[in-house]
Length: 337
Image (tube, one colour):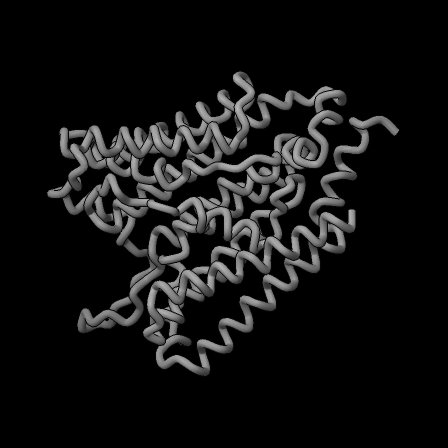
């Protein structure tokens, strides 16, 4: 059978392989254990309002995680995510301050994130820089630009319309007296669900998705089978940049202030959500659903530990241990192959 004829078979192997299903099962089990534990041990955790809060807090991790999943599946990485979040956020803020409509500023910010992703992809495919180095450089460049164009100061005094995307809700319910009965589903949560479904479809049902898996599994074989490896990699990093831009817009909209120092170390949360959800750092394996599970594990951990009064330092230790366990399982899985 030709290499080209194995592409669909390879896709099924990567998504439905026994080890991948086992890791996703472990992730889902971990998520359920956390839900039960915090529901029993923490007052007001198991409430609709808190679940909506968890969903809202998890959106930015999910957006970034979805993007970096594409990069990791190709066998790469993106360390520039946090800096791109800051750059896109201040881009939107400065444009609104200059008099641009909010919707136009948000589109421009998304395009800025897309541009960062394209540049990363070109550096990796055309100049042949290792993904670690290329995105490390972009991390410094994007952060530097964000600080330079804002003079390292927050962009404040933004109109209420700027915060509508991050703080608005859908399906809000009030009684006849006007009292709030249901706060509604936050816009970012709705966008997160739609985005996850869209990119899950792209990754599993389109040629770009199949080629992404194929490249991560065996780049040379993919090239010999006629796949345009460089183009697919550029697309993957473009998606990562765009999703970082979306996260930046949501974060700054929630704050109604654009912070050039925002997003520090956010790339670690994004990568962690993907790895916890079963994406292999060796490439070729991963799903959007797994990344979403990983994002919610991090979100629930932080929310529950905050409600229990656990310090942020201890939270870092706990999440770090979770990441080490997830990566350790990934390494053991790869040794068996």
